[in-house]
Length: 579
Image 1 (tube, rainbow, N blue to C red):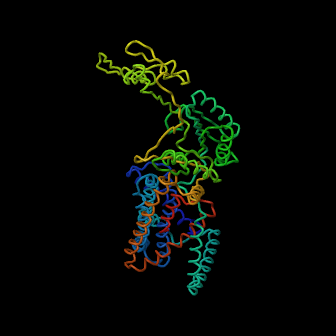
Image 2 (image 1 turned 180 degrees about the vertical axis):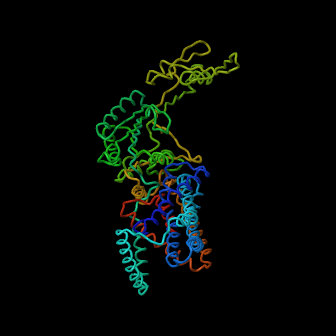
Image 3 (image 1 turned 60 degrees about the vertical axis):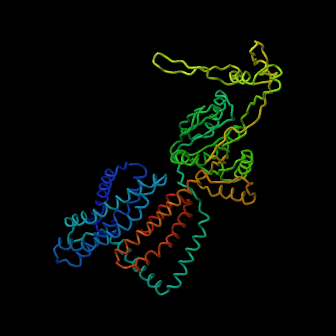
């Protein structure tokens, strides 16, 4: 600011406006019950460059008026200058605030993320307006003097700014004399930028290196806790040997990672790494290496290695994050066959670290087929056989027990046969006692049939669903989406099977409509404010016509820095409509 303002006292005046604006912002946050968190601090950082704009405009205009009318009283100059410039500052501030009002009113997960950011920016801009129209004139009335002491380096920089202004004037004059050429170049650049949009990735929130990642392992159905523990310890050793950057590794077997329910065939690890500046590998490279290592050495298990921090929270909200596609239909077998084919197509995509299907045929169902003919030939009734089989292989409520405190307890009767592994001799050992005291083996009247079946059947609105998920190496879901779309284009879904998106794709899809709606409302509010300012309807349209051309810089910037289109970049696009 010292280089541009060319005066130490003016620079100090603007510097004082920053902490005052922050102070007023914090007071507003207290009134609105907004805590100091990552989102609200991000809003303050974003607004930091904007809070001085109004103060600089006010200061420059007062100094200009003071230089032009040196014989006037200082207080009179300040009051007259402030009266002239306050209205444009109010219009400018209101225009910017109007952009963030619809963002602060969004609901759902998008609203949860952007609400604090938007409200903090609104408070910061409001505070900067108050500082500009009240505090800056007061400070200048104390500091402003006739004699100006300008530093040599500042004087040199001022000369450079003057030269730059001269070049700009010449360039502007040339552009005005070649309007058609400039218009064609601008439209061509905009069209080329829109073509390059296809090169950008798509994600919900950009991933960050938080210094921690999680390993979730699910073994086959029926795996006992001891086996889970033994195999997980092997996985732990593999991770230790691969990740030399780790400072702490926590292993939990017999439970899922953080948000799920306990299961004897599940285990998870939380790995904490050294700070980013103390290691040569990024967390994304480490995750990819660990995923490949565990896939190679831990056979027969479903393994997901995911980033921690905010990515973990987003993954929880988005059913695990990454990419997901849900198949819907009545025939479970057909759904599973289709899911296997899509999973194979997903596995061939280079950005996919691992794939999984939320349903598998790794469970066994035991069916006891009892023959009415054999029961009748042995003098057994269906009731006797049914009651006895329920007691032996399951359990039955036979009564209630009431305590002195009037508590009621159910009395359940079962057999230890149902707790033992089933084999060919189980039915021979199981006996049924008839009403005439005869013992008859269940093998004489029934057969035990083993069948493989799905371990879980999910339903959405009474329709069977199976979800195919992919854990991605990057935050971009475009590669996985294109792989599935290409497969479905070449291999249409069978009759009776429909699809719907899931994971981050669903989260992105659900967040787009409210963001687009917020963009349209913001454009309307900005136009309305400018109409009120200019008191004409046509002039604001000239300013609004420049809005599409700002996409040129947005797209080029995202491409240069290898960034993706995300919720935050979309918010920046909306905010840039008025900057």
